[in-house]
Length: 355
Image (cartoon, rainbow, N blue to C red):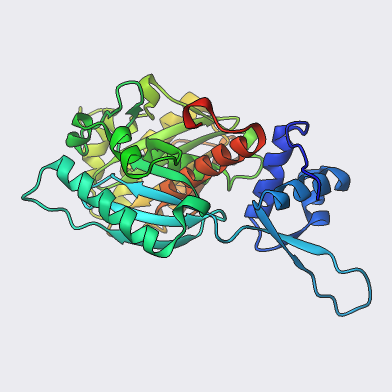
């Protein structure tokens, strides 16, 4: 097969096709064409180029009736992303394939008698050894994603956070790259990464304003997304919605932390959600709950409160929905970022820093 140049093809078309293949177990070229509104000729040309580069694989479709057997495409099952999670002291590692399925994971036992940096080094050494025993890092790992509990300042190589304050004292990027040489590394706030994962499940998300809001008994934060782009503050900081003060002077985060059940959470959140709607007029608000009690009734109760207490009409209200997945959204978001970076390098070649 002749090498097919991807540089001559519109990048967004390549990205749309990869996304379509990644979201399906197996998919035909005709189905991709229908989903992406791209011609069958364009789909075929890009699919052949991706097959040539071992990005996707192809199997024959078995038909009961006579006729040509079409090739079904799927992402290469051997490719994976390594995700390192530093959002708590019990560091975690996960392996995700290109379809964003979790293949493997483990948690590091933090050593209280060692320094924070010593624990980071030990975690990375254990992770590297464990992953290399089972997976071919050099051939199949597309990159390393690092989830952190606050904005990451790449110029200073520091994480700006009070959740795990020791992270602001260590050069995390340098340490991670030392253990995983020659692999691209993406470091991002777990809130930003989770927002990127969740908005993809909103139909026509690139044409909408969306608020992703993480609410737990210890942390409240959010991200405003316009036309698929995260609107972030200084150093890539997400919206610190938990620091908004209530009429009593108490912060939203403190009030949420004291809530005992979903009724209390609903009552506390209702005014903040109403103010958010009035200020930003979003099409969709995604609420990601992490509480030790059931939260299934919060969304219906919020909708009812907005109508009855605040007089909102149904046609003026955004769609309120639960997060697509209840756990590890940030792992999926980081894998998506790595997948896009990897695809970009396949099309345009390695960045100078990685050559």
